[in-house]
Image (cartoon, rainbow, N blue to C red; front, side, top):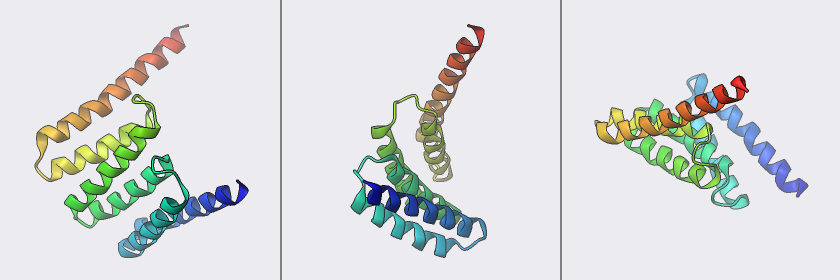
Length: 138
């Protein structure tokens, strides 16, 4: 409906505002905004909507910036879980999610799990590169 599209658009605008807050060093303000946006989206969207994954990922980014790596990992893994359900397994958007999980696992000293996530990201990138090369050669 037009109303739900409007509220989703408002949520996306607010997400951008929160990212600006984060860029300007207003971490706690950004975190509060993002948590409110996530609650709003959860009440209006299906549980596997990619927009939920994006906001959940943004919250993970704030926690990572604050040095709360365990909390960041929790949000990054939740975000990945959401987008894995809504996107094809080779979708380029998944790369950033795998990298976020991998980078955070690395910071937590979980190197094998970090490597697994980096490999998944690389596999998608290599597959995309092959597909683009095939398209160019035709």
